Length: 350
Image 1 (tube, rainbow, N blue to C red):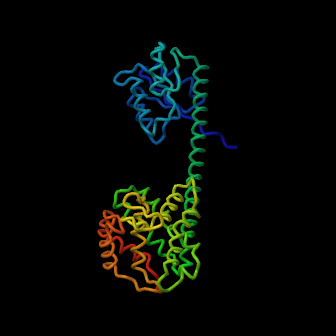
Image 2 (cartoon, rainbow, N blue to C red):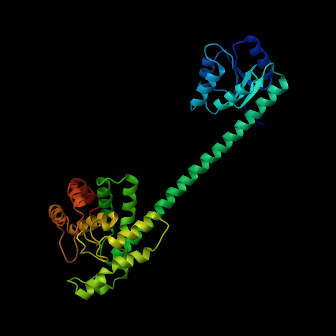
């Protein structure tokens, strides 16, 4: 049968007689450490074998008990150690000051053994319970964090698969949404958005063409130029995607709906489906428009060759102020090396 580890109590007092009295009371039940001043008490508390509880005299030279208590409660390693003041000062103001500094209790001199043992036992038990609860909270928090990470990964994979669903019907490989969403993140950061904001945009962007699921194959897969009627049908994919996503409590899904609806709007108001213009187009849609067009231009399709990076950036530059937000277009053109790095990381198989 194992016995519980004996607790350690640090007695701090500059008077030998007081130390002897408390040591005699506590030694049969606890390991006892001694300090004759506040500075030594702090040194012992910071040692590899710190006390489980401190009995701290108030009236000491150089550094009184109040100051020692204040310093101990300021340090991460010692702030949780229960401190019981042992003092002849019994005025209410003195007790209030001690409690405000973080003391757990007061023992009034002259002390009596039953009271000392009861108070020490009580506060050690309370400290153990508090530590046990804190450990349980820490374990549970870690478990929840792991679970949240797993849920986040699942959620993002579902969003990516939604984005790819439309691509599989459009004879694309799935890498378009990977590149396009990373272009959007890159540009979002360059235009001044925070990392979390840019990450949310990257997470939502794969849903931009989700509405293509609702476009008939004879239009979606037509190798030649679309008729006016066919193009009008193709334009409905923005509304279809927005309706598929619907109203959601998820910020990322809501953002995905905005991108699905507005990524074909143009700065000059000649886009679709709402013919929004300028800053009436949500920023998410303006960012997605540049990332989507650039990747479409630089990707091989059955009906076209891939444009060079330079030619695609030239078009982005020329269309600034008509198709694209001029400020965002200028910023994107200035990101050439970073854009090429993304292209190389997510390049199509030969």
